[in-house]
Structure formats: structure tokens, C-alpha cells
Length: 184
Image (tube, rainbow, N blue to C red; front, side, top):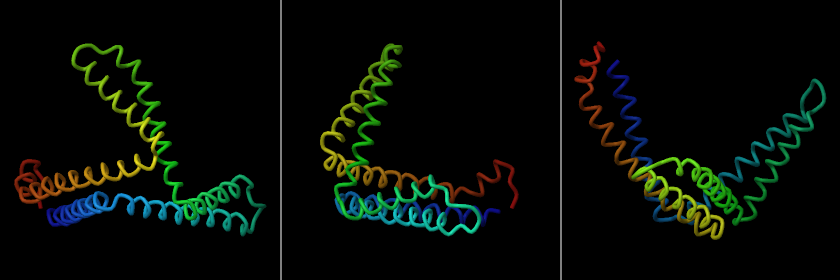
């Protein structure tokens, strides 16, 4: 069993290293990374839409479902828009900004019930969410670049912390298994 766990930990460490590499790429090339994400969205949307439409139109029994065909067509259109319009990625930034604002406004009610330092910390986080949401809506491209930089930094920190934790776990696996009463 410990061999299986060690293999799993090795794969997890590899995943942590991959997160670090992706984080570095996102930090160094935030605009290029956004473009790659845009193309991934375009290709996947087009492919999903095509599979749905073809699947519905080639059904042998019964007639195609109009709703499913329409959904497939919408996916195809989304794929084409993302492929032909680089600014389409800004839609995600705007939607994310709106989500931040709605969440911040919704949390004001809960913040009012808090007292002491919790109220200050929660209020500060609400203001940060509100400001981030406004930034993403007002300047979606700059916000998207900022998100990629933040995502890159987060991936690097996560990858390093995860790799260290997994390495410590792997080196102490026998001791942990003994404490948990797990036999080979």
C-alpha cells in the first residue's frame, strides 16, 4: 500500500511542479496566456456545439430536439466569436466583476451584524471585492491581465507549498502509516 501512496505522492509533486511552471508562464506572459485561454474556449465551445448539433441531427429514432440543437448552435456561435474576436475574453472579466460586486453588496448585510475586529476585516474585504469588481467592469482588459498575474503568483505559491508538504509527507510515510495503524 505504501508503494501505491508513494506513486500517488510522486504524481502529486509533479502536479505541483506543473503549477509552478504554469504560474511562471502566467506571470511572464499574461497577455499571451489570456490569448491561449481564449483559443481553448473557442475550440472547446465549437467542438461541443458541433457534437451536440451533429448528434441531434443524426439521431435515428425520433426527431431532433429543437432545444438541444439550439444549445449546440449557441456553443458553435460562442466558439466562432472567441476565435474571431480577441476582445471576447473581456466578457469573462466583466461577468467576474459583476459577481464580485453582487457578492460585496450581499455581504454588507452580514457585515452589519459583526462587531469588533471581525467587522473591520470583513468590511475591508467587502471594499476590496467591490473595488475589484468595479475595476474589472471599467477596465476588463487590464483586469484580465491583472487576474492572470494574480493567478500566476497564486499558482507559484500553491505549487511550492504543495510540493514541500507532499515531500515531507512522502519522507515521513512510514511513521504516519504506523501512527494510523496501517500495515503494508
